[in-house]
Length: 237
Image 1: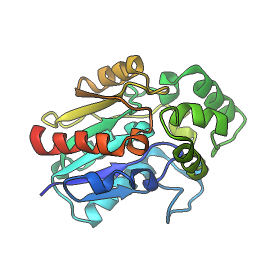
Image 2 (image 1 turned 135 degrees about the vertical axis):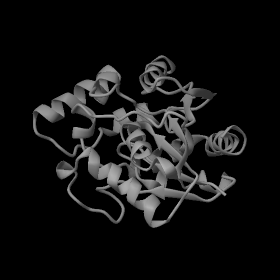
Image 3 (image 1 turned 30 degrees about the horizontal axis):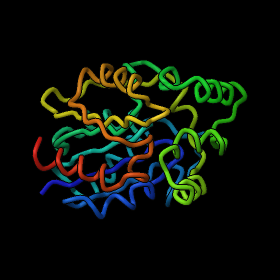
Image 4 (image 1 turned 120 degrees about the vertical axis):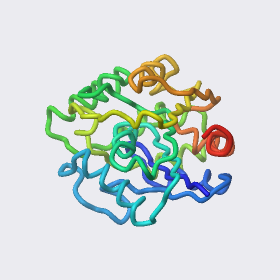
């Protein structure tokens, strides 16, 4: 049986999948990226290779094969390289509201103006591990959440490595026969549907699944997102 490997996005950690995993139809491994969870290295010292190494290392240590690799948001800068590095272990790639720059491009250039300007200012000032202001995070992540879910989510956000957002990133070509899917959230205020199409084009195309949710749909609509992942893993690959 295949397994899901779930990779969170910026300012989040593996906890963001906890309401979703119980609705999945096969085993799931939620990865904590460097700088959070058990790995407390300083975010300012990390490179994209450190993030890729963490995901590939978790997959290899668990000796997983036929992996449906799922990346949310900023994980779009990481998971395509994981697929290129360990292609024999990956069954399909699913990008969930993910930011995907063209090879050599910057994630920051794809983001809404408030987030883009904040990230660039933090980078110029040498703030290498910033926290997103709470009001901005509420608007970006929580627009479809109940007040209690929003509070719980905002309380658990963490600083992020701004260099992943503002510096040009290499992106090797995906394995040519790899099935690629993109889950687009129709209420997303960061990766809006129009921006999502740019990400899909940067990927070179993907099978698109539209869901009625905001950017953190795995938190606000876990059953809906899990059902989409189950359909992808069970019927389409």
